[in-house]
Length: 369
Picture 1: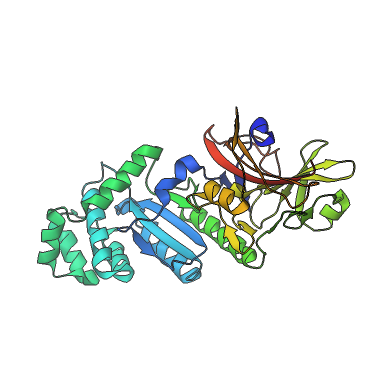
Picture 2: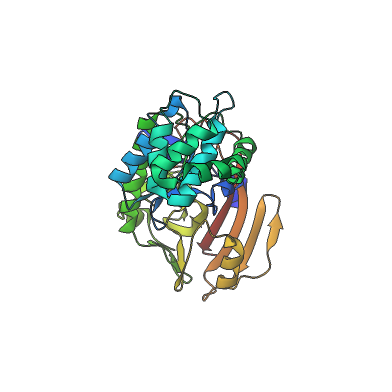
């Protein structure tokens, strides 16, 4: 299977910033939980997950950055806040519990008022001070709040956050994930803001981009079997040659990933691979849209497309699916792809600095048998 043989890649480049595309192995922990601190609309197209602490060192990064993002993109960015208190910052773990308590009691505005006071505070962050600050933020009375805080009412969220930190080996606080991508920005607020701005612009462009549709007898999205390379180029999408046979197409705004891979033979397209796991748009089949974050993506695709028995190979699985024409073959495949190879991004000359972590790749293919 081509996807397995080539050791597919995943890197995302936006503007001048670049970071590794998320892998299925490393992003499940970013799914929202019932006790998360959340700022922003549920339908916001961009999600920033922040692991932070409320220590003096972060006074210019946490609350001010959250406020700036909310002012700049109130409808476009959803911020999920979790805890990463450093053990050498006295009172940081207790402050994290108190911040969560304020949010769960009184919501986002009270949480931000609390953080704006507590983060730059130079004194001792003990239960008495934190509870008084909670009352000033609107989550009082202080006595009741302190009783809940000292009894560990909001400790579970902290413990889950610390389990995440250990599981994925985060290197420092704060730690930022933008749409599942590790920004590796630390205290560099400008870097976070720049990445968020680029992600919002890309999301706004995607709103005007139709979701690609599977046409079982013809092709996928704007591509069809028999299409010449000149016709492909006239679509105005960014393309790049992989070798004599394969053409990479970066089909989405703000992404350098090859969402389409086209096999070119005898002057025309003979196979279209749509790499659903690299696409933020998804794939429309009939009236239903399938997106990469769908929990049972492969099983649901197989059921919707009426695919047959899965064939397992050394590099993954491939499932033949029914076609309306004997002249067209349809396949559904899944494999692990390397996080550091040349095949998944448009510009393979950019130095890859990622790890060797593997990610799951799901591909829908239409080809001439």
